[in-house]
Length: 89
Image (tube, rainbow, N blue to C red; front, side, top):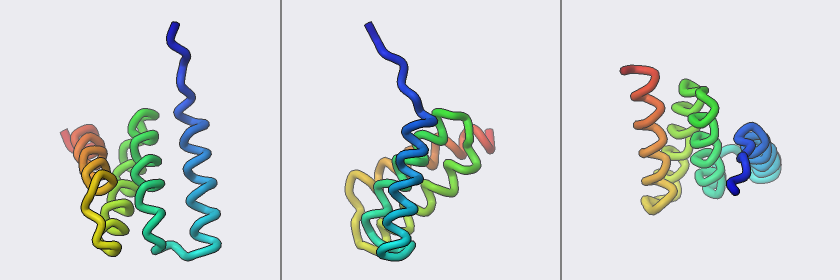
């Protein structure tokens, strides 16, 4: 039996983690890229596409700053494309 997943709770968790890291290390800390990417994915699941675009763009920018073009960078681009397709059909 599948259990329902609470995307709102997951988003709240990511936002709390982002706030903690930003408070401690600043808004440009490279570890925030993955959290922003994950938050963008949850925002898409919740139908909040404009906010998802913003988070995905933040993830991509932080990945660029860190020179990290791996899985997080790729996932942020996928989420960004999905959100843009919903906002700009």
